[in-house]
Amino acid sequence: MVTMALSRDEMVTRTLASDPAAGGQFIVGVKTTGIYCRPTCRPPRKPRPENCAFFASPDEARAAGFRACKLCTPDGATRGADRVAYLDTIEEAPGPLAFAVDDAGALLWLKFLDGRYERTLERELEREGFRVARDLGRTARARGELLEYCAGARRTFDTPLVLAGSAWQKGVWRALTRIPFGETRTYGEVAAMVGRPEAARAVGRANATNRLPLVIPCHRVIGADGALTGFGGGMHLKVRLLAHEGVQVDATTRRTGQRV
Image 1: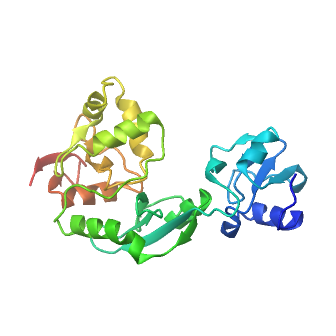
Image 2 (image 1 turned 90 degrees about the vertical axis):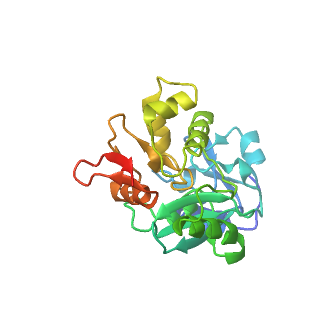
Image 3 (image 1 turned 90 degrees about the horizontal axis):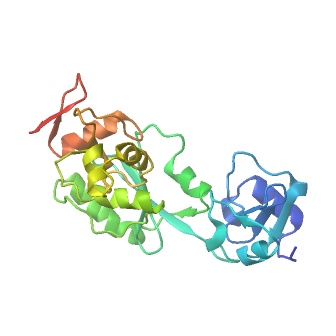
């Protein structure tokens, strides 16, 4: 255990509260699980105070025999470091939506403001150890491209993307960006695009974990019979995005038709 600027009681309090302000100040190890986390981590169950050990860095936690948490990915955390996500919103259709970028302006996450989600975008970011801030300069490029898409003036995106997932998920997401504006592909066709024609179900699971809908256009993926199947945040969002791109959807059967 290392002597730190904060007292043990202060670190325990901030850890149990998942205090966003504690990000980068210390690392907490949980003796009962052998895992070390960011103090901002939000596991299903918080540790008892007596089971917490505190470290100045992930290196110190590993040296003490702890392994990294897969939920908050603390290996990028160092003393005094601070991961910041810059939040912005757009009201124009097919929004309204909220999005976040990193320090370099790369897109981290996007959610629709009228979507049905378990957590808001801000809460999701805090859960992953980000401090949420606002900076119109940092969000300007992504905001401009999203507004161009909303106005019908943009069909693909050039803003860098942060893809947080497995190699398989990233391969599927990159394939989705190759589906042209106003067109659809079945899950089986996307599976074939990534060289796994038998993996349609796995494509569906990768779609469900896409943090950048609209930009990574999972709304363009449909069932083999033309059914819309599902969409994170609600089917109304998928219908709206497809309609924006000129894809006709039967309101009764929720199946796609010809481009209008």
